[in-house]
Amino acid sequence: MPKGQKKIFLGFTVKQAFINALNLYFEEIKLQLAEYPIRFIAPANYHLTLKYMGWTDDAKVRSLMEKLQTFICPQVLITPIYYSWLGKFSPRALTLEFSHTSLIGLVKKCNQHFIKEGIYIEPDGLRPHLTFARHKGKISIVRQLALENIVEHLPCLKQELLLDRLILYESVMREGQVTYEKLCVQPLQIG
Image 1: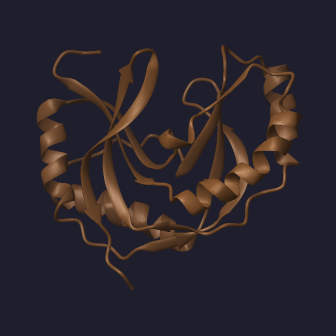
Image 2 (image 1 turned 60 degrees about the horizontal axis):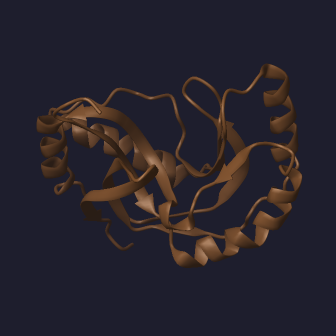
């Protein structure tokens, strides 16, 4: 961990009803991926990543926390559309992807808010997503194609997810496990 920095991202908590609905699909997902070295993430660590920022110096983190308190936006109701493999360098994260006009609008509004407040957040090229499993180790192109083929045919959850609080999280390693601590929570407006 670089001194004086935190590994951060903006995201949302995932409600228990959504987790319960997702768990109904896990038996099929685990069966389809049984021959691969996949580690499923504990539901307590589920979150929807809106914007990954990576290692960020403490002064910028404090500024983000302050500016987040002035962010005003309505709540958003979204539904997952497909599973995919994501990764900045290697597609090792099994994710549930969301696409909805109001979610895209929320990302845009968030970016505009921070730019207006004098904080530029580098684009990360990732879409908003919920990671629920990771492949252990590097993935060859042959394995990547096989894994993509498997998840392409999995039935997708049709449960809606309410995004009602934008959260600045810190990714922290504790006792060999990554946990996500809430640094700042900003409620979104109803209606």
